[in-house]
Amino acid sequence: MDQANGGNIDAVADASKAAESTVQHAEELIAFADAAIGRDEEKMRLAREVLLQAVGPKGLVDAAGVVGNFERMNRIADAGGLELDAPVRVLTANIRGELGLDKLESAHRAKPVGRISKLVARVAIPIAARVYSKRNS
Image (cartoon, rainbow, N blue to C red; front, top):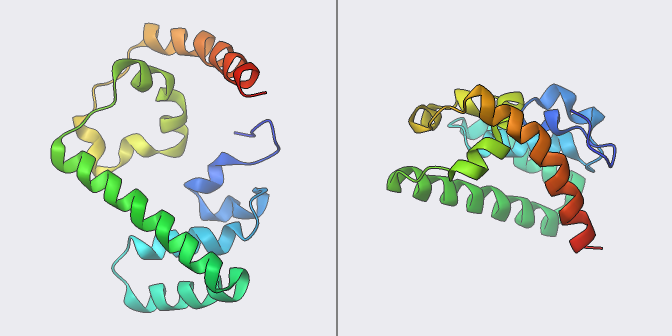
């Protein structure tokens, strides 16, 4: 899925597509994030060294902070049994499907989105994007 700015959101879930991303150092960042949520200490050490060379100490600290915060928020949400609100579930159904998020272990608790809701989302998303862009311009 190409974004309006030329980015490739598929790279978020598929490291092999990182080269198509407009994000600087996408491959190194994805490798670091993957290693951070894994259990392989050697893989983490290597990913940390590679990212440090690519983005420097400040960039490494920033990346570690983002990964840590994201992991923390997900653990809190999972532990509390939080679910997406119905409008968010509907509006994010397509992107969650494209990224494979519905295949994650914690996704089994999420209520499925029906066909009618998916059709509504196809109409609502472009409208919401226009409203949001006008509001922020």
